Image (cartoon, rainbow, N blue to C red; front, side, top):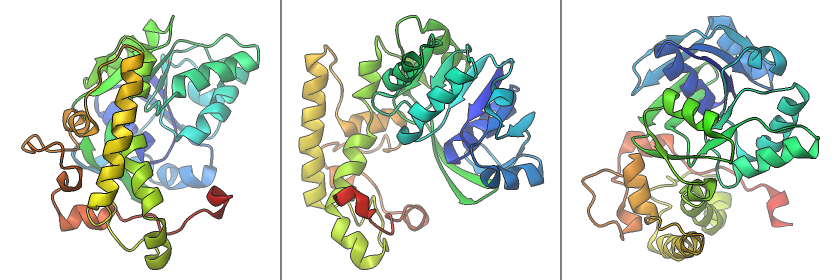
Length: 296
């Protein structure tokens, strides 16, 4: 049993609470917003459904006080989007965090940014490790419940130098962890930068015209989008080779993770990787608007 501070109360953090509580760990859940935490606190835990079963995971503490969340923690599990990493790292540095930190996920460059945030404040970084992608497919359709429709079969894990304790903690918590020699092998294996960016950019007109009333992974995955993804994926793999890493294609990586079925043999057909499933399609609609600041 480990004392785990789960940092982030979105779908990823909620899914982690569900799994880790079920596995017998002592969990404390932190979220920045008391309003986000209120539904969990009111019902006494995180309601969950899906591949992990159905139930109510009851963490020891639900709080927006970061110091209280990490107090006596054996590991800090960060389940937050990229734009929140630096601010959280500064908060942990100010709180004197020393426990190993595991970014689930690290996205691309997450561990490096986390370490730099500590150093900018003159604080010694704790051991830091990162996953290449989130260990779940999860959504929060209602504020107090997380729907977990997938659990990763294999996810790349790596630590910064002197971060072995963080990597060991991640391996103890997640059986899907596959240890890599360095964080660049994780950063450049992040499928989201190839999967989501072309689809979002090339579908901008469709988003504005329909307010997101189309399915991102099926209707939005046209042959043209697939060609752009394939070109971007080639560049990603070329950069990885320059750093000594021979990484598989995005489709093969997703098949290893489990988000592409093992029965799919034509991994070059990016537009045909997802078999149309009405229930899945309805749950993964495109974004409904474009942030004007992105076009400045």
